[in-house]
Amino acid sequence: MDYHINPDGYYGSFGGSYIPEILYANVERLREAYLRIVGEESFRKEFRSLLRDYVGRPSPLYPAKRLSEKYGARIYLKREDLNHTGAHKINNTIGQILLARRMGKTRIIAETGAGQHGVATATVCALMNMPCVVYMGETDIARQALNVRKMEMLGAEVRSVTSGNKTLKDACNEAIRDWCCNPADTHYIIGSTVGPHPYPDMVARFQAVISEEIKWQLTEHEGRDYPDYLIACVGGGSNAAGTFYHYLNDTRVKLIAVEAAGHGIDSGESAATIRLGREGIIHGSRTLVMQTDDGQIIEPYSISAGLDYPGIGPIHANLATSRRADVLAATDNEALQAAFELTATEGIIPALESAHALAALAMIPFHPEEVAVLTVSGRGDKDMDTYLSHFGK
Ligand SMILES: *Cc1c(COP(=O)(O)O)cnc(C)c1O
Image 1 (spheres, protein in one colour):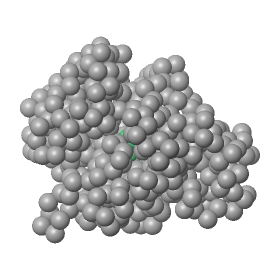
Image 2 (spheres, helix red, strand yellow; image 1 turned 180 degrees about the horizontal axis):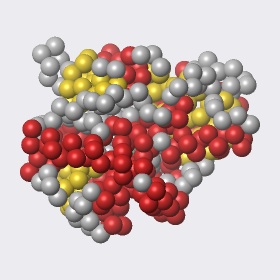
Image 3 (cartoon, helix red, strand yellow; image 1 turned 180 degrees about the vertical axis):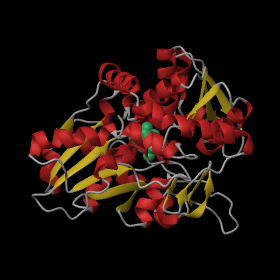
Image 4 (cartoon, helix red, strand yellow; image 1 turned 30 degrees about the vertical axis):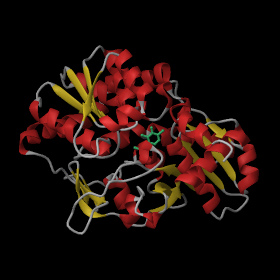
């Protein structure tokens, strides 16, 4: 099972590998090696046991009773917020560090926006005793001081990026630049289903543990292994790709991807890339990009740093344009309201990113017998300052 990728790494007309020549050999070696390595029994065994004993998988599939009553459907929450380091990102970083070691790499680099992927990468580097450099925009460093301190305590070097808007897009550019200078010894751990082939496919495979678990967990609860709806937020698309993975060809299942509308789709301040983007190339991949008529990237905006990205993974660009997935958008205010609602009804404080998925519950015309699984991609600890500044408003 995969996302109908062709041998050149295209999903429909999206994807591919648009990289500087100096990286050709490196990316080619990765492309040749990753399928073989992830198929090896010893790799699978080590990946599985770390997911179980270190990350704490399987993550629960929780039947949310009060939320179900409120929205008139049987709603289940896939609790990626309960993973070690607080989000789904660790599934991917564990997979990639095991791959990097088997490929003989001795140094790890990563980019990060809010710092969640940076922390997940620094964590597995501490675990595997590998040196780690994390590129992070100066603006994000100032906004996410706690995650910066965590990365440093975990032994990573956080390099401040001062180009462009000084946020995630600029950190990606710097990480790619580093990789160009150190292609032989360094593995670049990309944090989402973005970047040149084979990254989107590789990251989706590591996150596919989410839908693999949903299948048997849902069978235990409902006596059938598929829901009527799968709902997930999309930044670059990794938690959604993992949630949808084993259901891609099951047309009984409606796939709902929720992007960040910021102040509103037409406000000029949003990160609704699928709705607003046009075909272009960003960070090594042909996909939908928010851009001006002359191809300049438009700076995205969302209250949630994890969704604040001007591109979208090629998998989701294809799922949307082929109409396999429905794309909804939630504004800052709708997400905040949904976060407070989940906290009050179920006692779960979600990440702001996940709150965008929760906001979509109010937009779907459910029937009472329908089953919906919504992935809570992360926990809200990192967003407490934002929540407190809006509390009671
Ligand atoms: C990074 C992040 C996201 C967005 O990334 P995807 O690759 O789209 O999943 C969503 N939720 C949380 C909690 C995150 O940390």
